[in-house]
Length: 539
Image (cartoon, rainbow, N blue to C red; front, side, top):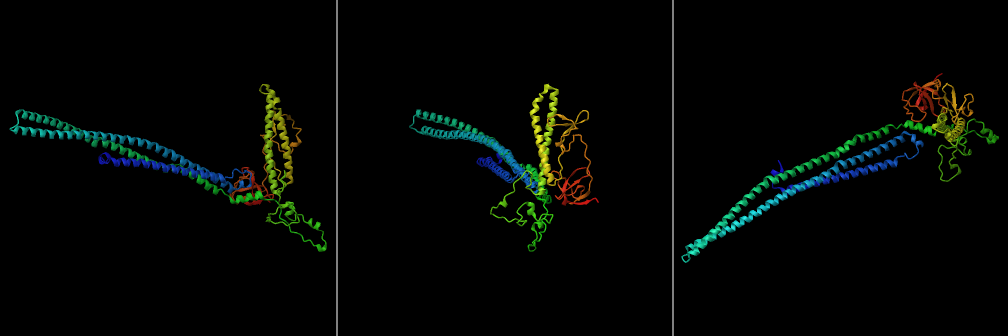
């Protein structure tokens, strides 16, 4: 069934229906545009929210950065930022594949519909023009036929009048004959116009208009089909990014599962443990017997209380929960930060000194490598002057030498402080030796010159010196074994990961800082929390 056959007389209805269909497309395009604006605003708000709570702007050295709950929160914020990006992608794809495409298609449909309606109007005007010609010929034929009848009646009446002359009768007959001839011509013209109109009318109602109506039907069906595709795209656009959105949500779930409350507790201990001993019992001072208070104070080998350890006023009592006072007092002043970290508790001081030593050793190793490179470059320039002037390297070699001496001094200073603080004294080693072509062991001085091995530099005595081809030191014999009670990620530098139930060799006992040094069968070594394992030492 088609419009040309079934709706041949419903031009106004078809015109109104097609116009309504185009308006529906416009309405849907507007709807999708508003949806994209919502998505864009939603994505923008999500990004601003993630940025507001993202703490990456703070230093990574801050204590809370080591907590798994903190890292998981950062992961969650990153996933939310990625999720916002997917919402933006949805808005962008909807705008491109639906709004822009449908708007362009709508303009084409409007132009096509306008062309078909103009064709229909032109055919209608042509038929109306033919009908006017038919009506005019019909009226002329009617008028001339009546005149011919009157002329015939007058001629007959004149012929019967006895008083009329022969000339009058002949004249009346000629007039009647002329009128009859004109009427006959008008009749033939009317018949021709009628035949022409009927032919055009048949063409109009059975060919021209059905064809136009069918074209409009095809246009409307294409419009409906395109609109249906737009509806489907509205869903598919979001479906296409659902896998990525799902990964973002999975990432948030993973961030939650990565939180390790036990590990966070151990981090708090590691960061905040002071290393002080608990205060001993206060002695009874019997003033009635005149006991020497000074000797009483020195009778115990352990400190009387934390005030002695913290260097605060000994006349005041020690409380775990300090009373906060709004009144400003000198005691509330934060201790001045010193270079040797003496303002920190013993355990935290050892850790900070060890960290500083590692930083200095790394920097020193860089300078030593730079010195060796400059020495080799100087040798090349001396052997091949065309490649460069050895004197041009003097300033760099001098600067590198000064840097090495400065770093060695700092390293010696911090190692002394670490020894005073009761540290392990482990130092990151750096290489200062290479082998010459004869296999002799040469030492590179910082300025690139070679010094004989028999006269070592005393300032290097505190460093372990070895080359790229050094032999591994003999591994320390285990003093026992331990079994892991919990999983430990080993994310911090110097630690080693372990799984619950894993058996490891104990290399070094806990020295009071809550960490035990262990070794795997493959030779990997590192520290683990003592409270995470059960230890069995060799007898």
